[in-house]
Length: 118
Image (cartoon, rainbow, N blue to C red; front, side, top):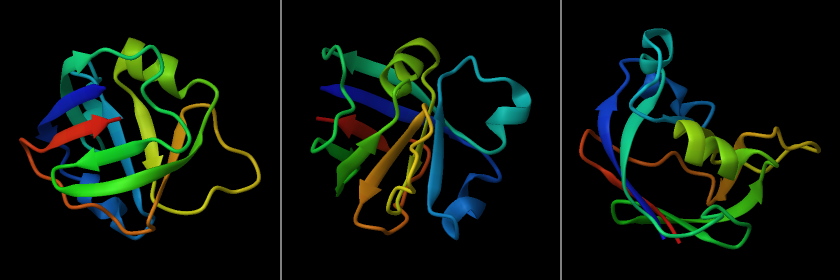
């Protein structure tokens, strides 16, 4: 399981609702990234590759099924706390740091929300 808590919601993060994208970034995110990202702090990381196709992404009480994972997503998450999560169907090519989740609805989140990959 990979469990993390949102510690800061960037002022522009909610504006990505139309595109159905959230951007996670660890606490060392540069200022220009902080405006668009959900800054989070990991409390539990017990899996080598926590993000996997068929796995579950949980944000508070909302659950999503992971449908595609980019080749660098797990490494980026571990090293930088960074991935981009798309709540849409994947295009032909999945970007290395991208994760796709279903259903295609923008999640509700706030400062203090808990995110779990299981």
